[in-house]
Length: 72
Image (cartoon, rainbow, N blue to C red):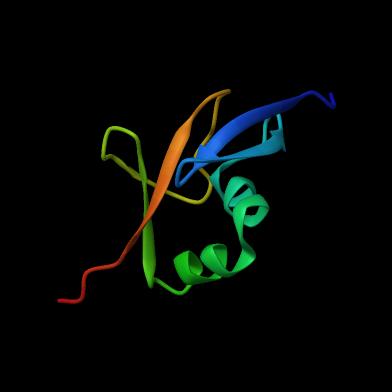
């Protein structure tokens, strides 16, 4: 299974293999952004504002966004 799908991270198109998840899309986008999410400096949301985890599934055309984590 080597079919690629296109998803969008912060409105930039990235190509990942079908079956990969949010983690892989972030790494394809920018490894430093992935590291910031892992460290808790950023969070991930889908296009509807719902929180996503790094293991979340993605489908063709999915849109995810990274946001600075609010300090409490």
